[in-house]
Amino acid sequence: MSFDTDKIRDIWQPASARPLTREDSREIASNVVGFFELLAKWEEQDRLLGGTPNIGAASAKSTP
Image 1 (cartoon, rainbow, N blue to C red):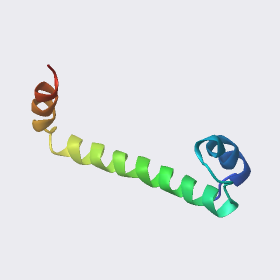
Image 2 (image 1 turned 90 degrees about the vertical axis):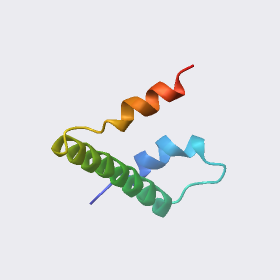
Image 3 (image 1 turned 90 degrees about the horizontal axis):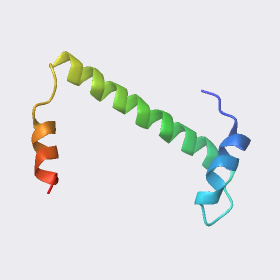
Image 4 (image 1 turned 180 degrees about the horizontal axis):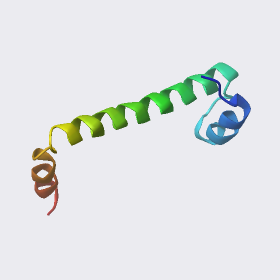
């Protein structure tokens, strides 16, 4: 997969204490893509299994 490393560096540089390299930018992009792929996989699994009943229970416990 190809990424615009200069644009990625421009976006993420303010969040870094050190100058980001092209390799840093490539890794950031790869990690972000991987994160959203994982979320999509979980959503698909959840859809196929008919939902996760524990999500509501966890939310109810965290509210005061």
